[in-house]
Amino acid sequence: MSQNKNAILTYHQGGKVGMRTTTKLAGPDDLSLAYTPGVALPVKEIARDRENLFHLTAKANLVAVVSDGTAILGLGDLGAEASIPVMEGKAVLFKAFGDVDGWPVPVNHCRLNGRNTGKTDPQRVIDAVMAIAPMYGGINLEDIAAPACFEIEDKLDALLDIPVFHDDQWGTAVITLAAAMNYCHLAERSLDELKIVINGAGAAGMRICEMLKTAGARTVLMCDTKGVIRSDRADLSGKKKEHAVTTSDTTLADAMKGSHMFIGVSAANCVTPAQVLSMARYPAIFAMANPDPEITPETVAAALGDNPYIMATGRSDYPNQVNNVLGFPFIFRGALDVRARTISLPMKVAAAEALAAMARQPVPETVKSLYRADLNFGPAYIIPKPFDRRLFMDIPAAVARAAVDSGAAPQQDLSGYRARLQERDRTRIFPGA
Image (tube, rainbow, N blue to C red; front, side):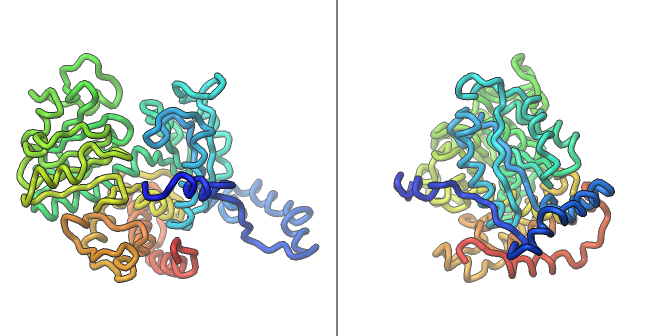
């Protein structure tokens, strides 16, 4: 960690979010418009036609960042209150990168027991989100443990007519798919010919598996703490049962032999140099456990030497950071702008495809200067950097088009949408500017 404890706590002192008004309140006339008697008119207009809710309130650009604190970062179940710094951070990233107004909504997930920790009651979270939903144009779920997170997202998505997105499931999956697409480009392979191993069968691992299969992957082996998720295991249920395979491989070491891609969303230091050496020629190792990866880039480099490979982690101090900030601010930007009712799988795949394509384009000098690196498409640069302003145009535009084409949003003319994004980018406050 590059910053010391005092610097971190000072940065968070007083919280990281607050309210700002979008209209002036300079005198009596403004007061009568903002509140009584003027406010009665928009109230009546919304009651007359719900469509006015998106024009006469902040709903159209406001996302609730909801957590029950059962899976905070890699720290585990520490309760809703302890989740607030992360939810505030998420709101900061929503605004800074996507120009979306996010607001933390910590939710007590079970009957109070002193610290409000313990197994999630999914219906309690669902009821809480349904109760606050009228104010928000989207719901971003965060740090909710599996398997409750699957039920919560699925039910809310079915009940609400606004986008619901569990970032721990889908955010990592979108960025991982983009990285996998560019690995295929560099290794001159296609997704359907890869043997892919995913270690970690929680929320992120499950959705990564689904995203890869949707994009064309055919051979995906998932491992949990008991080994390969095989169809002959008697202890499987739910999502694990859906992705069980028929194979003679039983352990992670077995699965790694001859594999082209390893994806880790599990635990530190669980992969050995010998297992990496057993992989196919030109392997991809995406070791994304935080803060310590399944195997370090230094260990992989020592094992493989001059042999070609691609390495990615979840950390910012190594190349190819799989960082969710490349996804959720821009996915929601596109979804909100076209009034999507959901964030469909085609929208997620479109975001991944746009990310992958962007990484293959020349990188602006301003981005190279900020990162103090000569960034060019190749093994050390397969996904864009978060401070690349092109993300604000490329990802929302792709997501919006997929939303309309997939029926997740109403039919509409998107011919001028990219130009509107460019104008919004010109006037917004960008981080580091």
